[in-house]
Length: 394
Image 1 (cartoon, rainbow, N blue to C red):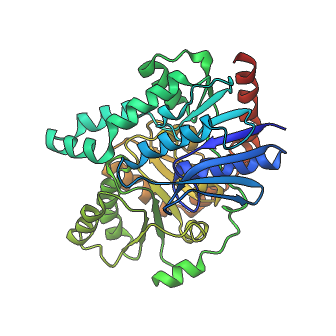
Image 2 (spheres, rainbow, N blue to C red):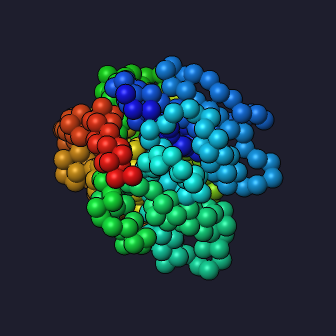
Image 3 (cartoon, one colour):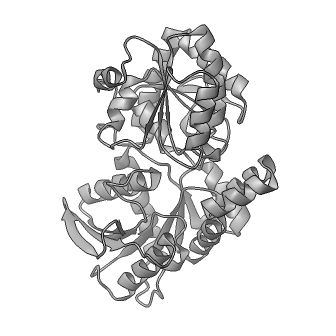
């Protein structure tokens, strides 16, 4: 049995890719007989230590003085240095922006880090695509300097790295000077029981007043990176040919007001449903309620949402950039289009909504691909191999 301590800023009931990744991996490794501790955040004013199933969870309060991510990093490091979790064989950072968490490591405990997102690449794309003022606003709101610096620090100080996609691996080695033999590529995974084609989406459709109409679904943060504005533009053309089509948007973010304004300006207020952040229990039902999943990100380290959609038996449309290409197989589980191209998104959506057989085939092939490549059981086994390599090298 291996004693593993996960460090993550986000963990359920919080939602997001980092929370889903840590929870899924921790549960799978626990099922394999390993002892698991998770150090994460809480909205409370004091530290909380509890058992969630067989997993020990230490929740640290967020500072009212220091930036939240910084205060969590400092407090988590203190916990590790003071030995609060007890005997630990492996420290695994699943937040890829927590470089200062790594303790002095006097006990030579191997430190693993999962790198989800190429921040340097995100900065470059945004810088080339926006005005100076818009870039400045983005950099401040996103805290991109902090994220990029700490990701680089984490990569250099960790004993072994896990990249969730080929794209992320190439970015890390190129930008941070990381040797390829220090890094393993292990993809994200998804709960194949929680997300599956047998779930009924009728409840969600009734709640929104949708009957037999074709439904397109977007799940993601409403920011520049996810390309939501290009989907809205494409959808404004789709409704001219499919007047009853609906678009469900799940997520929140800095572009929420811009998205709402674009919807109103395009006369789509009766065709688009902004659901905001949704309860995690409802998410599988929302996937079940759609016919087609579309997230046209301008860049993506991987994108767990594509796996959730494919596991739910839904065809996907994404951009042929970054880690998306590790998830969607063009012409088999969905369609890949050029990034930032609303016309191509429109053509892809039109093609699939007009072809029921292809839509169904992509959904079946997507589910099959997830079962073969992206289960937590398989990913956990691959991760254990990384732990073993790290233990032998420290």
